Image (cartoon, rainbow, N blue to C red):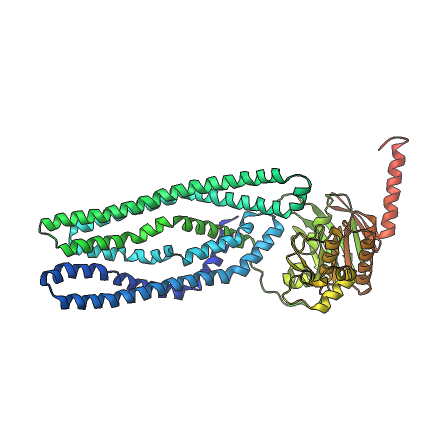
Length: 578
């Protein structure tokens, strides 16, 4: 992907983050006061050791304690407030992009199944959200105030200041080393985890086949191997991160002790007071605390950076749909003009220069051997795969002139492999609408000749099904899928191998549904292997090697096919093959 295209996704993410600029400014201001109030502890210790103990004044101690209590309460309130604000910044960022990322991931998955940027999209968004809400980002607001604390240490004594600067430089070097050393292991651990989860999801979705073919043990071994790689990579990355985190923590504690030791030496030399010795140690701990937090939570930072990069790539590859001018409801006129399609991720076209026109009330059967381009044509006709050349037009308008959701309402689609979603049958037919229109659901089921079948189920339309169908047979799932395709009065119906799981009654019901669509002035396209599926077709198109081999009235094309087949047999001679 070109850098400019990748930058488009980053710009979109930055724009979403930029919506909280005002809140970032508030957090910065709160952080300023919080860090100033952090001086309360050291100053209190300085006054107690150098003034209260020397003067033995209880009144001064009480007054200082009351003042310090008020300042600490104020600091706690401001610190809590900025934490709450940042949690809302993270929530706003995720809420702003949830729909956009979800839609982009869905489109990318339709184009390239199991694409890493699509599979992990929601987790990547959550990783960025967690970073925005985490203490490590508050540490970023605290780091600019580190020079203030070091300057305060210099006020006590220059040697203490130099020790603080040396310690800070060492911690910064450790932080940079942490980033360099752990970046690759954390990335590999993330990729390995995604891969193992993908394998696990695939095996669970095919649990019936796994059990029936005795593949459970082999499947577990395959998943366990991927899981083992993920665990190994995670442990390796965790070990490296832990080394730096513990080193940073131990070194900071050593520095505080070194500050006390140096301070004690200066006290013995008469160059420093006892209060300043204690205050200097506390100040240095506070000055270096943000760096320790950053190192300790660097895995979270790396995960968010990785997620940000993948989200940038995803949003760049799948740009946001521009607003479309609303077009009137189209007539059932579907036309392909020199349609050429290159499947996503491939370089060779599987559909080349295909043209046809379908008028209202017509049904077109598309036949051909496996791999001839029928399913590719179906995906192009419903707008899932974009043409590399040519156009698909619905009532004269190219498909990309319609809003995708609006176009989906005009199109009915039955894929080769029908999947149901967790929910009721009514919700599945209604295309997952929150409050399905019962009348439209029943109407679609009747058009698909599935109404009586559904009524015989234990809870009728309210029967709950799972993503794999549950108690339903393959034929029942396919008929519910057909009802879903016919829901909402579509003008075009695209059926890819619609009778692959149907018995004789189901095939008759399918033909009845096709006939009813034609009678209503709708158009139907059927990708088929079996002759029973094209009984209601007026037109027939023969596909071979991604190209249109023949097209015309069904009976004419069939006679031509039979004639050609007979001539081939004759030319082969007795007992031979041409």
